[in-house]
Image 1 (cartoon, rainbow over the protein chains, first blue to last red):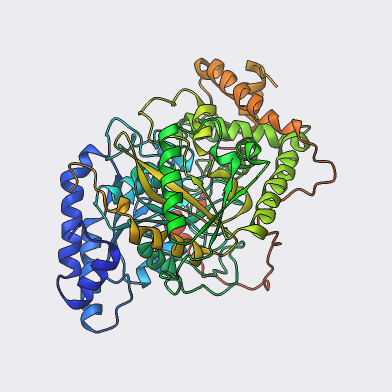
Image 2: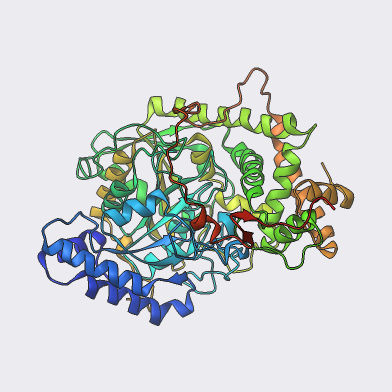
Length: 484
Length: 95
């Protein structure tokens, strides 16, 4: 059962081949047997999951099922879940059962999906390797000496190891697409504003976007359909109807114009990854697409611009963690200042502290124009590069990451080198564009991701482009040894 | 721009962020590296370029100023470190 896609499982539930309780038990059993070696989960919600599965079975019997009814899944531990610990990977929130549900949580509950637990992540989603988590690193199921990517490392590894058919994630600079690539699964970051941020613990509010981890693009269409939509509780939610993400899945790719930015294929790209991407592009040509050389000249500025904008917004957002209303509080504070300073100093880990410090500096008097304003200007240049490119092409392709999964500890002491592992993914966040990573081969037994960036609200096109490729390739069906 | 230990201590104070004095040299080095890295931005001429604050250039939505949420204080205070009579408790501010 655990090897089936979400789409196949939904068909099995609806035809009565198995029940949601049986399926949920199978997932919980795999988590119990296999997660000890991976550390994907911070919290497993067994009793709640079985209760939800029973309710889903009743709903299916009553003929009132939605496509996700009875499907087990895992939430990244950044989405608030009422009464369930919502840690955001931090000591700061280790004692925090969320008092309310995120909109995404509620929408998936309403659809009848069965949450089996909350997944491990880089602390406050700040990291590219899942090594900054208070709960320890997640291991990559393809090679447990390597990172799964981050920040949504637990969600990605759990789907790759077939513990769950799907999971949620968030993507601020690549935190869905990079781990999806390194774990060999399908990850989708929608257009900024498409999925509500209400109850999704904020890191950098102008960049954060919730999205999906699944095995296939078709499964992503089903999960996104349930998550997406306008929410008046999120001030940047986009008030626009949700497209039918399944409608164009099978549309032929004849005439599709694929832009290949020269900047995505230059120095710094692992040769094996480059070869895998070339092979994938050849496959698209066979499917009728045309490859067009393009340029996104400001690509090199995206990581530096991001490391001003994201820390600035983070330093502002994380000021709410003060030891007063929720979360960690230091013992025996001398006075109010000591309460704030020590609660934050003891509650946050090193990477979060680095980013708060950088952001505080960039926003401080006398430096605002030189850093934050400058980065926002460069952000426009980066966005304009994409607008020009999309006049010529339908989608943009390249590698999701410059190399396959790196070793645990390899980049932990060098923040700038870690930041550069998101070099191909960050620009889509700065521009607010949707993007997909799909499995496209292996280098020395480690998965490679193909990155597909679309125009605003072109999720339907991205899923079509992913699905057609997955019909003629089987990279997405490969399973890491030991997780068959 | 290279920071020194005093800069880092000042920024940490602005952020009300406790830093172990033993870790200050490492933060100083890390933050200087990050700032040197982001200084690439200075090589770009951005004269006349409008800053982009929101990717879709949307502006803040307004709503009518009416009560839209029920009072859920007890629930929210149930996760607070210390409360009394509906108030959040902190160390004494005025002697």
